[in-house]
Length: 322
Image 1 (tube, rainbow, N blue to C red):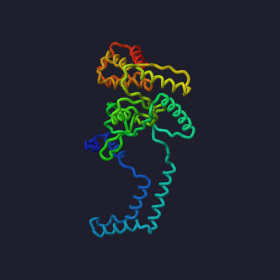
Image 2: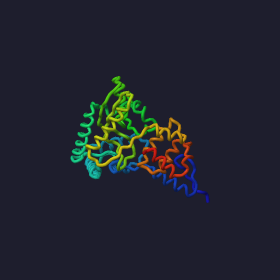
Image 3: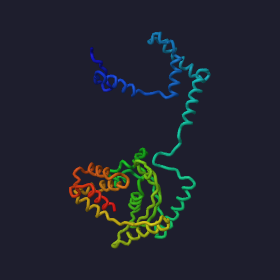
Image 4: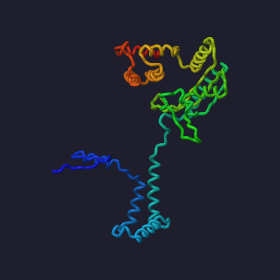
């Protein structure tokens, strides 16, 4: 008995039992007509029923098909009216089943939420103004090249907009980059400003991570010989937490050079610091094993020999983020 031979989608011969699987796969890939389209197709088929015996090359047949097509698309045709009624019922049925909800990673703010949000924003603004910050508002989207300067390898997290007039734009993912661009645009050497606005990150949405959310920024941009500005920012933060009455809290201070030094000891090149730090930042949302695997994938030669056991490595990472 000769083996059953079939050809797959790519033209390769498939033998034996694999032929059935290939055929099933091809059948699965076929387009399935929607209900409304199916009704229309069946209506056309019924209109042409019994014409297959006529010579398809006949000019008369083509002319007859044209006349028949125009005839059953005539609004005066009772059959066409029945067709429209069926399509209307299908559309109404689909509309009744459609769930109206916001996109993933976003939410609505109803009456109660708005009362709370406006109260919080009022407190935030009062504290910011108390420290002499001016209000600033920037566009919700910037030139993509402006945003890419900071994001680098995480550029997949930004929302790109359709090209309009030759400019490639993206939605802002924070308020810091627009502030820096504002200072450069206006040639400012110093500025104390606050800004409250929505930002957008194309991240995997979860219970605690949104794709659209508010940020409240307070920045002092200038050059100081002392750390006076740094202390004022911390003071602003503690005043906010006190007035929001969130309860007890603990402020932990860190410095990027401490983390850079630890990563340098582990053999991470300087150009990979930012990417590795992004992985470490996810430690409160992912398991330690996932973070470790991600860091090794980013930099295969990541030297962890000083921390040979998982417990020591976990301790190292905890020290970094604490």
